[in-house]
Image (tube, rainbow, N blue to C red):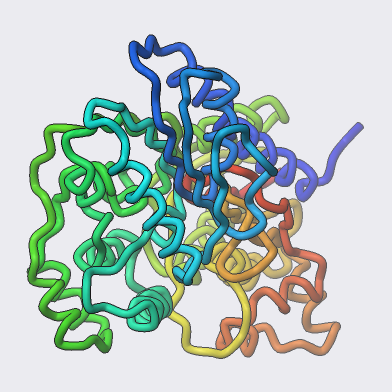
Length: 416
């Protein structure tokens, strides 16, 4: 049975996500490790519940208690002996602070030689947070929103977040010293820099106060005198009570996509695993590659698949609804208008793209024509950053629901 290029793209995306679900990695790296002492479990991020569930299943009574902090609607239910908190993302809320304070209180009551099993995934920057003394939750929320909407990259955002936090940038490990921390991470950061994943709560911080100050000035982020003072306080540059290991990343997701594309008869090429630019520019670039392949069979001859991993950004100028993957796909649709046997999909591996219920979008050469026939101006959609409604109008949203993992985004160009 012959599938359409759209169906093949959806199949490849599903396989890529399936291969980076956390259970297998946690069972392999955590469950098979020889632990000499009982452990206290702390799991943070969008994949926290599934990581914690797998660890508890693998280690059983070896885990003497624990806390999970994950995004609303990302919990799968009770885990015996483990308290599960849900909190705000991408902006922290009251539950974020309550859950984080609970972690600190519980850990500090443990014997000083009790190891902490620290399971970290993307989203942890918002979900694991306790601001520096004198900074209110409202100030923190306003700053996070301003950074998200400014077009700042994730590394830039996390640099500022670290310097305003009691737990980021190595400060969690510093606060619970001398208790040993064993951190296992699903990377959602470009280049898999451990100090940027969830803002590096248990890893020495490479960013500096000067960088943090430069970022808030570069993007004109309003902040108080107290916040200015906190930005000038350096984060820990060395730690002696923690070790960290990455157990999943976007590189793995891209290779899984490559494998699935090959099995479906496409010649695959991983273009990059560090895509880092404005979403609409990435969309334009992917559509330019599509035109190059169609016209000149370069860099590959059809049928082929071009795969990119990373994390783009959106500079919000309009008042619409969308996310970086939806904006990338929508922008790409404009560049492949009228082309046959071409599909471009972009998806957040966590299943949620921006403040929406969609994981991303999938478009083809007929998408823009369909939109125009429905009476919607595609250029206005892009100007308003309203790609969610634009894609929804032509049934081009990719909706997976929360996947339980988070290793950046995967973008796929497929040509028959």
